[in-house]
Length: 162
Image (cartoon, rainbow, N blue to C red; front, side):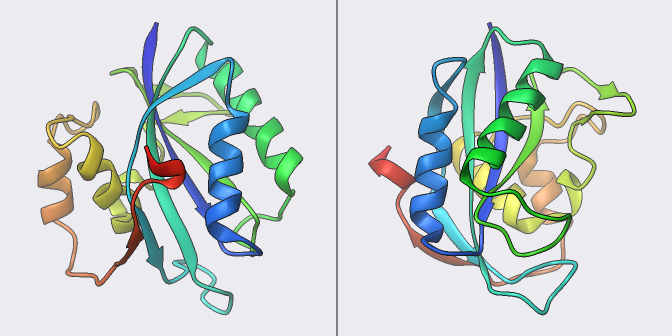
């Protein structure tokens, strides 16, 4: 059984509902064990689009990393496909797979943007403050402290009340 971390974001439609639906759709292959509070954030790369709701979940799975990616992609497709960096009903980023470092043409874990994204590190810190990022071996709190100050708006408790 592996512990994994996933980042979830939505900026179209019922943003909170989309995140809840995505979390529920991960079962039974992926069992969500913790969910961060939800944050509202500005888009990062393509800024001319609606603000995002973001959250991070901790989960367990027996799936291989490749099968986790397939499951994530199927959930995204079910809720609403999107183009890269375009507005989306749901985006699920595969952040961490245990302490493994994976670098293939199809999959990079830890997620390539993990260390530069406040909207990922802050909710990750909420549920796993002592977690170490496998490449740098730094704690999430250290990585968060290395980012420039950013105002994230906390929207509420974890989706689904977890």
